Amino acid sequence: MNIDFYAAFVIGLMGAGHCLGMCGGVAAALTLGMPGQQQSSRWPYLFCYNIGRLVSYAIAGAIIGGAFAGVASLSGYSTALVSLRLFAAIMMILLALYIGQWWLGITKIERAGQYLWRYLSPTAKSLLPLKSPISALPFGLLWGWLPCGLVYSTLSWAAVSGSAISGAGVMFAFGIGTLPAMIAVGSMAQQLQNLLKSLYFKRASALMLLVYGLHTGYIAIKQIL
Image (cartoon, rainbow, N blue to C red; front, side, top):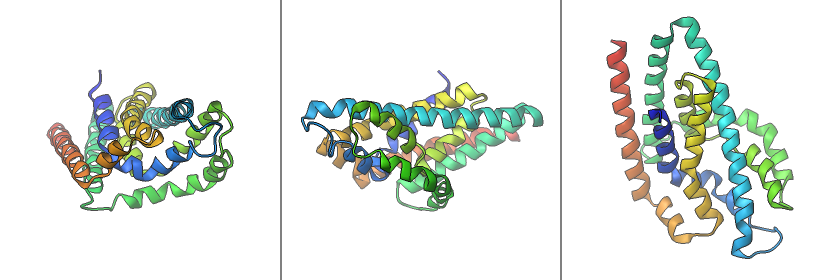
């Protein structure tokens, strides 16, 4: 499997604490006001919501991956992609600093996505409360476009994937990595939530991403030179 898929999966998994802050309330809201309140009745809603969310990530990855692959092919394929990989490494380093709560500058990138979300948010909110599990699918599709530094950082890896299909695969792998956090909050697994929200977990995850980002950046610089 392409190393970028693994990188994207790790970003989603290690960014779990951030996922709880950004989307945890949404996942919890899925279980409020829906028919039946038994534990088992939540799973169809959570499943459809997360499928919709992962599909939206894959669409975004396909768009970005395909667009940058086209640009790279016109400007010197290998050189352009290596430069983009250096940019992706920088984004991962910034993301690590953000997750570890050492520097929050990446929030400025999140603000750039507020323009699109301004139009999607009313539609997403109009779907609540959910009437059936299938209604959670379009809700997840819309919520996948929520402005998020974690998503934007991973999109930089989709950009260097080389094709629309690979870009979609990178973002889908990222979405798979976020599932533990989303399922934990949706199923009210309080102990797991507490772990994912803890500063120790966030900083341990951030250090792993930081090391990987520095390593990737070093390799990219060597290739450029």
